[in-house]
Image 1 (tube, rainbow over the protein chains, first blue to last red):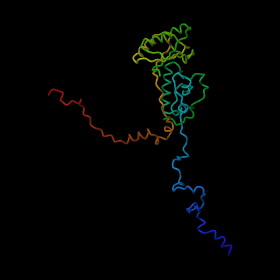
Image 2: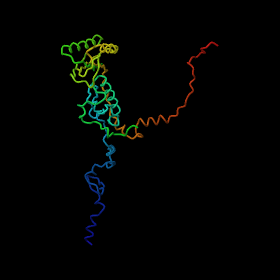
Image 3: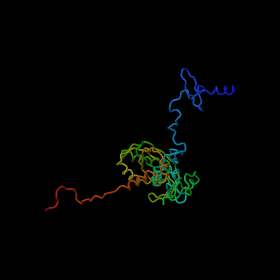
Image 4: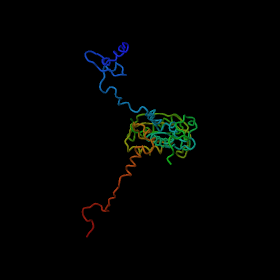
Length: 145
Length: 148
């Protein structure tokens, strides 16, 4: 009986209250004591400005990513967007460029051909081994038609 | 930023002849009221395709770039002058512009058509009901133009 009394003596309501200074603050079961000293009413609510953690990185085209300025004198760079067999400019689905950059590449290619820097009917032999920026067999999007 | 850029392709010449030809080209720019800003040589290279200039086929050429400021009315005259120069295979005057900084819109373009902004705009335009208003075929006079 005495044992039971000893056990139950600890389970008095007062044990659930902690004395800090002059006030008796309620101790929440399951929470650490350290955080509840400075608890505000909305402290344990979820943070609002987290954003979507599963959002994928924004895709950027090759030229925009490296800030490359397309120039009509740079025939080597321009020929990376041409077919090595026909010398024709690849469409946007193959090159993977954004609209603005694709348009500027097309315009610069015409300028370059007119000024005599870039070959028209084919791709220069020295440029064939250049790193491939676009693969016609693996377009980033299906064909327009 | 210079206003115009001239890319010259000169035929294979000996050094003193090349200098004379370039001087001539530069002087035509100055004559037309232009100011030369920069002079760059891009070397003597084989041309990307054989070019005919003044009844002669060329397979090799010397590339030069001249940057200059000139009045817009002068460009037509310049092109005329360069056409007549025998030493020039090709001449190409381009207007220099500051590169416009823009964000890459690839992400937007890769979305399925229903989610793309420009496609959505098209759909909106299609939904608009166009009420055709009858256009009277009058010149808009407030008097009767013919003799009654």
